Image (tube, rainbow, N blue to C red; front, side, top):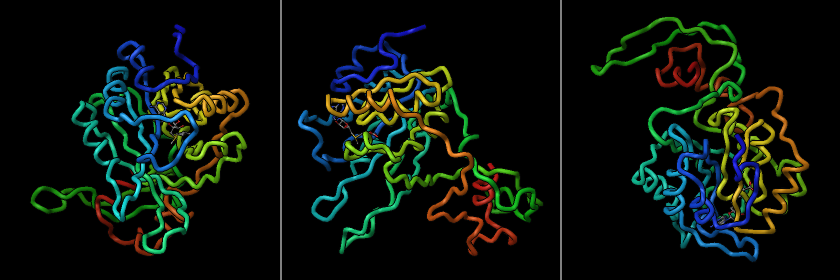
Length: 300
Ligand SMILES: C[S@@+](CC[C@H](N)C(=O)[O-])C[C@H]1O[C@@H](n2cnc3c(N)ncnc32)[C@H](O)[C@@H]1O
């Protein structure tokens, strides 16, 4: 069934637009708010009412739907604002579940003499209800370095601190990505996209949309910007709705949707930063007995 807000990029305040949507009409939200007013965007200006947006997203999300929230905090007078964590707790108070907190690892820029290089952002995955309506992580898996190799290990430690199950564990062909997602994307080679000052990677959008939105579902990005989520949704056969306050950015998004397609890389090589797999590092030498949690990460 066709609905009048599908496959559109609209110019609007996100809360005002979402208010016009019926309850439980969106399968998934994905978005990245302006980070504590860190950048001056276009002339259109905006106000940040993240709490109000959370309320509308929860109302319009289908049961079991997910909101993927990509964010980092500004640094003001030497301290991080912590806004991303305040939002996470506030969304939980509103009624979202915090399904997972992920790290989006990227290459930071050396522009601080007095601070660490900023190499990461947060990806909070909020859910409506405890059980997800759709979840498929197959495309996020990476090849095991030693497929079918058997490792000595333990799988569990009981409440009494004793190992409850020990034995040989066999590596598969592929392993699950952990909770750190590495995207060094360098602008994705799109001249249109480069006209927006604060975009997220194409592959990030594609990965999470294919993981959490059913193939016939509709994805909404309430901070659509240059339309990355819409291009990713369309490339993966999903429907989309993008909302942005800026006419200028929305035009860029529309042009991108009409002309760009996001191609998934044939094979993911590694799940960890700097091009090194965890299996490559000495401290994670799997020929030794290793801790249960580590095994969970490798084989789940
Ligand atoms: C971090 S950017 C998102 C960029 C996007 N992820 C991409 O890849 O192009 C945040 C966007 O939020 C928009 N924005 C700010 N306040 C808004 C509001 N109240 N309603 C809708 N959009 C808003 C800004 O115009 C800006 O384009």
